[in-house]
Length: 112
Length: 115
View (cartoon, rainbow over the protein chains, first blue to last red):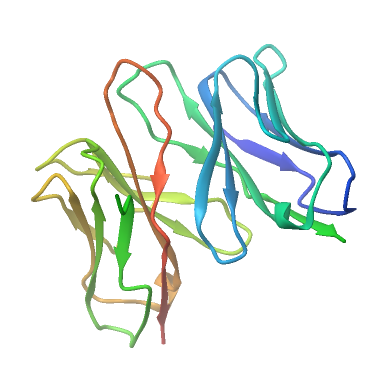
């Protein structure tokens, strides 16, 4: 069974700390997504990547295809970063297949 | 642009009642999806559509039906609601241009409780 695992499940940190959230998957993928779910429930896409590294503001996403692993980093964390961060993968290489398998999420709480 | 919208936002049903959830997108996306989100589990795909007039089953389709009569709308129906269908339902859409990997855009969710 194709699986996506995230760690840690819950993470509490002080404002300003460097945050790392991990995602591992079982077989080869074509793309990996990082999503953010706000406390109010809305889900937004942060990154989509199939190799290397992407950066947007204080957020950095990396992926290691050989090790089947991705990380999401947050620099200079802030209480407004408190949310659930979700990893999702697309299996296979067919552009027409856009179905995703989701991890269970990492709940991040940043304390002022 | 409103993006992806869902109606209603909240609903309480009794066992056996039926209802339809509406998803609308104004981005001219080809692909649309219905997911459910339950505590301790990742989002799971219920049904999806790769274009107007097409639908396909996802991971957890039992007890649900869908229709995509217009490109911008994707309806999710529960014919006879059961307590196991208590969940938060998310609709999403993506361009589906088949030449690149696309991100998905999510609606705000519908919280459904079946008593």
